[in-house]
Image (cartoon, rainbow, N blue to C red):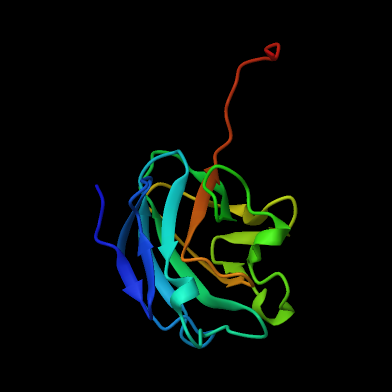
Length: 183
């Protein structure tokens, strides 16, 4: 099921690629009034948000020398049948390949003040800037039906009007004994 896109302060978030259903949003995208997205993740594959409009914004809330961006809080409900033991967010300008340093898109990489990332159900956060742009929350769990709230910032020094936010969750696989790995 797809929901209608959510447009906040000129930025449009869409669940058109699946795995996630947007339930609504609010805010201006500033550190004191972040965009807040309410989402249900509905299957075990990547949940992909499509984000449009950043390059068209004038005077963005995290605008600095040569950059645009916004603060984001995501309130995500686990509508899958599995427990999530990690929650990973990855930015991409091209859905087929990871974001590179040259594309300028990141989780606030060049501004230390905007790199305060939190999650209410995970105790550890790891930021990965190269070879891809990702934030990984671990050391916790989100059971089916439970909700996790994560807060972060996104910036782009060469803003484009379309990029993607991939959301992945890890669940351990149980196995009996060991099996040889196949090539």
